[in-house]
Image 1 (tube, rainbow, N blue to C red):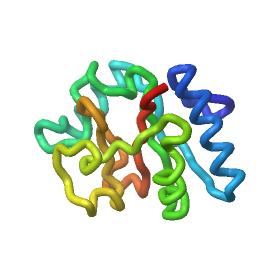
Image 2: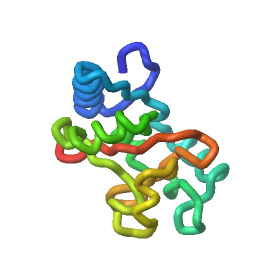
Image 3: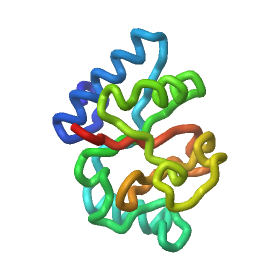
Length: 141
């Protein structure tokens, strides 16, 4: 994606580029912390952060939307998170959290650093020491 070094599926990359420009036009900064991840990289994440089914933060390798280039982890301050919740859908993205997935978590998870899927299990690599952020997945593109 441009000069960021991040990669996504082409339609998702195009929409994310538009989303970031739209946010910037509103005075909001949306940063990218992670995007496409190879199978090998997913194996590494699963080994370091553990699998969802064991209370960890990673999907089983081969099941992550990151591996399809359809998920992106974002660095968002409070203003950016509010903007994303209001506008992400306009660009074809949905917030991926335990609460939104309906598979666990509490409403407190929506405002904390931990993020995860929105369909089949999708890892959120924003851990407690990684700072604030959210995972968004391309939906309806």
